[in-house]
Length: 176
Image (cartoon, rainbow, N blue to C red):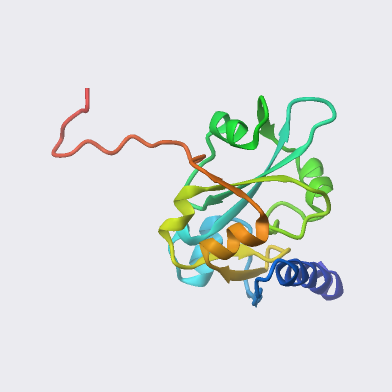
C-alpha cells in the first residue's frame, strides 16, 4: 500500500473518532498487525486487549453489514450476534463484502469510520481490559482506546456475543 493511501485510511479513522468525541492516537507499526496475535506480539500486550472488528452479513437479500467488536482471544457466537443485532441470522462476510461495507480491507478494519452504516455489536467481555488496541484503517496502524470510548465512537450495542468456553477440568477431572 502506498504511503498516501495508507495515510488517508488512518486520517479517516482519526476524523471519525474526533466526530464521536474520541481522540485517536495512531501508532505506525513496523510489522503487520493483521491478526490479533500479530498485533499483540508487536505491541507487547495480551491478545485479549486486541479489538477484532469482524464483519458479518445478514442472510436476507440484499445483505446488510453487521460489525462485531470482539476480544482477540475470543470467537463470535453467530446466534448470539444475530440476536444482539436484531436480525434472524448472520454469516461471515466475504472479503469483497467486508470492503464494500467498510471501505477497508480485512486485517485493517477499524471499529468506526466505515463507508456504510453497520449495525454494531461489542462483546461485553471487552470491559475486562482498561486499554484496548484497534486497527486504524490498515494492517500496519493501530490505536489505543478504552472500552467506554470504543462503545461511544462505534455506536455499538453491548452484549455477550463471545462463544462460551467450558472451563478446563481441574485436578484431572473429566467434567463428565
